[in-house]
Image 1 (cartoon, rainbow, N blue to C red):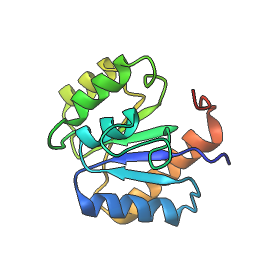
Image 2: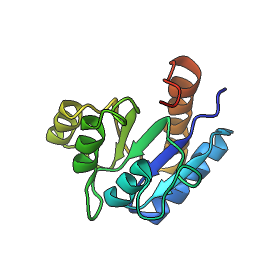
Image 3: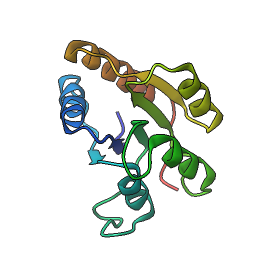
Image 4: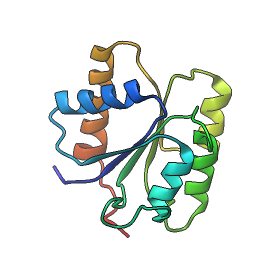
Length: 145
């Protein structure tokens, strides 16, 4: 298993903690970084406002919530996928939304996967196991560029 950095953008502190614990439950050894809104996400990715290559390494995978303050997930996704330096980073929407329009819009903007957040921790452990198996064991991800 390669050490690809994971960046989780979610404004809910409980969801961030549960996501971290679910990955730990699956023995995922990849470094996980967290940001609380779309603005922090873009600062992390573009090394602005206190973020740099040391404390904000390029992620190999982004888990993105849609409903966040300042810059929501849709706006952040559009910005990531329109940036030549960032667009190759796979993005998974992990959100409470089940709205068909959110799913369609996300794929139109270039998301790689859309997952509705499960309600129970056990189901979240299962979802993170599938993410781990697919994104870190099955597919080939690009090296840092």
